Image 1: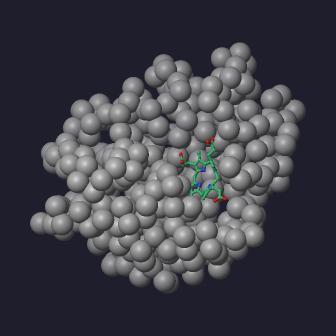
Image 2 (image 1 turned 45 degrees about the vertical axis):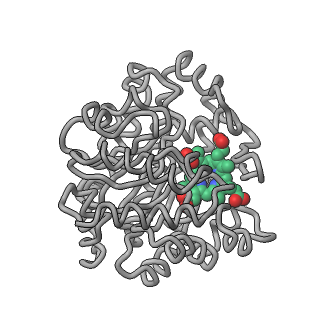
Amino acid sequence: MSANQTPPTATPDAVKNSAFLKACRREPVPHTPVWFMRQAGRSLPEYRKVREGVPMLESCMRPDLVTEITLQPVRRHNVDAAIYFSDIVVPLKAIGIDLDIKPGVGPVVENPIRTRADLARLRDLTPEDVSYVTEAIGLLTRELGATPLIGFAGAPFTLASYLVEGGPSRTYENAKAMMYGDPELWADLLDRLADITAAFLKVQIEAGAAAVQLFDSWVGSLAPADYERSVMPASAKVFEAVAGYGVPRIHFGVGTGELLRLMGEAGADVVGVDWRVPLDEAARRVGPGKALQGNLDPTILFTTPEAVEAKTREVLDAAAGLEGHVFNLGHGVMPSTDPDALTRLVEYVHTQTAR
Ligand code: 1CP
């Protein structure tokens, strides 16, 4: 069977009929579904407890820990979807790239990818490289019952930003220098990353993920013409590779107001929006036929419950005419967020949108 003829996965009916998957498919929903990017993690004391003494990458490779950490926000907040606990650099580690996730810093790559010879270090990913993912998703889908599990991966540009820079960056100067200065090497790098990312998403879907999100967190640093020429082909290749499964594909980045239309065209069913563009305006930019996800400013959670409700009301009002809306923050939960503020937010969106 060719990659384009993959069969639909056996998502159970109870999961298929969840508010989250209905909203992704732009069908009527009993209430607007809610989940939060980075809902698992340091904002939860129960997360800090189970992670004690376990390095981040090791925790991503232990199915027992992955299962527990993924379930924690579902138990606590009553969110409408779980997101698989991992990190975008896990598939790169799995193919042997010399990287680590340093506390308080993020992913650090010992020997950055800068030359054509370096590309040889990016071999294909096989399901055996990430057997712990298949095992953890098997455990998780049993525990989750009717709650959908979202799988995810880093998009080629955002992965390249870490690989070429060697770590977190605010300017992406080395990555963009390669993109502008050696377009052929850049295209080959992104194409390699597209294959690795597609293989990693397929593992998650075949194990039971009911939707997938491609995080292109840092692509908002590009102008639309450069995105279209130098990044979109690789992201489109990823979406195309998993199209046959029939699971919703979500596409998200930060500061992507000027890129929303193209990010939808790359092959997403749901376009994630940060807090800078109101959802009604985002819908005009994306065009018909796609659901939107977002977009409460995560810093609003540091104010009062009244201010959170007022700002949430604005998001819901802007979303009122959408074909499909998945409520989320405009970026990840910040580590110092009060978890009770998140629980209250889920409750508020559910009651305000109950139909
Ligand atoms: O020890 C720790 O707790 C390390 C902190 C941490 C955690 C909890 C990192 C390091 N990654 C994660 C988990 C993680 N990473 C999840 C968890 C699942 C959930 O949402 O509940 C997810 C979805 C990611 C994805 C991820 N990693 C992205 C895309 C999402 C986003 O926030 O834009 C990115 C850019 C990364 C890289 C990364 N990993 C970790 C950090 C601190 C960073 C960012 C570094 C930087 O600023 O460039």
